[in-house]
Image (cartoon, rainbow, N blue to C red; front, top):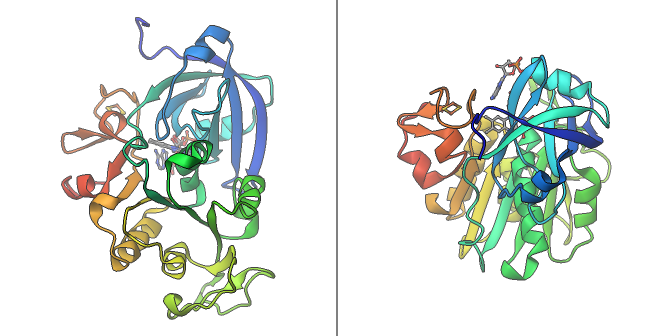
Length: 307
Ligand SMILES: Cc1cc2nc3c(=O)[nH]c(=O)nc-3n(C[C@H](O)[C@H](O)[C@H](O)COP(=O)(O)OP(=O)(O)OC[C@H]3O[C@@H](n4cnc5c(N)ncnc54)[C@H](O)[C@@H]3O)c2cc1C
Ligand code: FES
């Protein structure tokens, strides 16, 4: 046990994957602790987070996007936002960073054994979900149907492309990838779908007649929920992405018959300490860093509307 809980351990970047490009580019960093014993002893669960520090720049909280079923490394997917994340994007393989954690609670995967799982993600919101579905797929027999709905603005903005394109070939994963409709100043343009990406019925998504086995759609993530129509019986839905996406995903899940205790998400508040000491991340008396970041909708509905 360390005497100073803010003291990070040194980890080395083993690999960097450029997921997306542009001003809000995303990179996935695969890291391992310098101390081999520490790496072996670093136990985390899907949904947990860690503070990543860059010496002289600061530290930021990220969810651990790798699965605990894969030993020997951790992965973080980082979107370039400001000071720390931009500096992280400048790093190269072999560079050192600080990591402290793991922090927070996790998705109750034990409790979900035997259930069908529907993952609904958008943009960088796919990062926490990835740890969960990779974990589930490594324990495939423990769960029922697995559906993954993931959307981004364009095909260039999809993270984890190779992995997801591999899932298209798996008969035990129902995959629906989604590219946004293009926007113009005056509103939504009825443009042709990207080649090879099935254009859904935008007015009445439930009426979409996609050929069996279609995995690539053009539309919006919440509408794809209505196109893929997951059955609520014995099913848990896990969603993460921009707040506006989550709002409509929840609305559509409820339309399909999901109740609040069948819907889970992970919150992203501003954090400083990550260990329940600084009071930056609280919603009422709940500390997102300690009591969360994973919450069921039932739990969120009991909190003050401050998130
Ligand atoms: C529990 C948790 C999990 C997270 N997981 C991930 C992840 O997996 N991948 C990832 O890329 N990011 C994640 N984030 C967000 C990440 O921590 C912030 O983007 C990062 O701290 C920004 O630091 P910065 O110094 O680059 O930006 P700053 O220079 O501090 O700020 C730049 C801009 O980013 C905004 N910003 C800063 N912090 C946050 C925040 N916490 N939430 C939203 N906007 C913020 C600021 O308003 C400002 O506009 C997570 C945050 C939390 C709390
Ligand atoms: S981040 Fe300090 S109390 Fe949660």
